[in-house]
Length: 383
Image (spheres, rainbow, N blue to C red):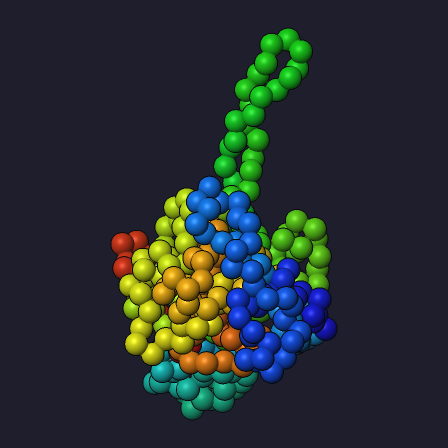
């Protein structure tokens, strides 16, 4: 079993330090020292404070069976294409597909329900049904194309898209099916001795610390850096229908503002960006926002660090404004909370689902307007 304890987290998203006595608020003092609103900052804008962060333990496991190939035979579904023939009768050969309602049409068989059957089970069913017109028919069934099971690989891969899941496949094999990680040629200077020569060196564009894996609408704690760079096969899960893999680029500098804000969105990062300006760029907080304990999530999605900020006091000037960094996630809760691990899990699940929905929409409709809420699409996300 792979424990969240070992990951310190879902997914992919130290000192947790509130500005006020959050330990009393939460009934627990294990979140570390208090946040110092006047801590030194690396920002050139000295009117901003630097939040201090700590890790949060989720105590969640990856089921061990997810690392083993599925034992169950493939079961047919809508869209799957088949070639069927009564043996020794070439004129009966026909290519057909399973309709959206799970039915199959072949010869005189009009709408036989076949969804959920294996190929051998379908063969027996057809032989039994076709016996009404043929004497002891032997039927050949071939599965040509799988369309009922699929997975997503999006982001910085060579060919992002939706792929059929026709056989047991691991995460590494799924990324390979999408052409592997996208690379770019980076000019570098050679020091060969007889004049310098410019050559190119492939450089991976994906930010593996921000990559994530979604199953059934929730982030699974897959450490893509450990898997793809260090060869740690403990994260090489077998892919299931509807799984979503996202490998973001590292060049974009954005801050994600989510939760109880009027326009949940990715805000373009500018130098010296503050918590107040980021939330303002997201349309401000909603009427029902719980602004006294706003969460900033920073770092890897599988090893996130968290700070809790009394945004109400920041907004009124009673507490110094807070500096943000590229890729920070700002989560404004909708109600008071007591367990930071539960809040963080919900925030990360909403974050990865929203990113997944937007990336999928851009793939299907290049000029699609970004969405700021978590919706369900292709097995990804739920609200």
